Image (cartoon, rainbow, N blue to C red; front, side):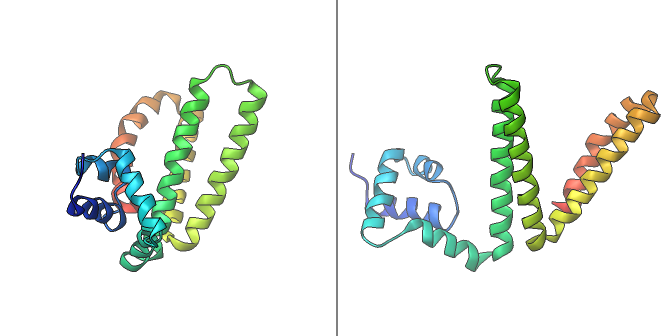
Length: 166
């Protein structure tokens, strides 16, 4: 099926300027993923690098903070996917899991430390999360009978933290 140049331009615009993933841009335009990938590849061959333009648009539009937020969000998505895969796969030996978890923890710490330099709210959020975790441990160890009430309060309080620290 032949698509109009306008459709190709819309896929490009969604991907480059609206920062929608190529698969979603293709879906929104009624184009197969293979067609969108081919268009992107052909554009690159012609000197139109959609990925470089996308990065430039991010920097020009929202600045380095936006890039750092996107990088941190992408890492956290991968972090969660890795944790889910580790928990779902009983065939991974304990020793290998420990190594993977140590590597993941190291990557997490480095990513958060790097983002603190660019995103002050990341540091604030990390501090807030640490305080909440310490409070949870304190309640569990010293006042276990109040643990259920703490859990009930924690969810709405988490929403307040998210509003405050993003």
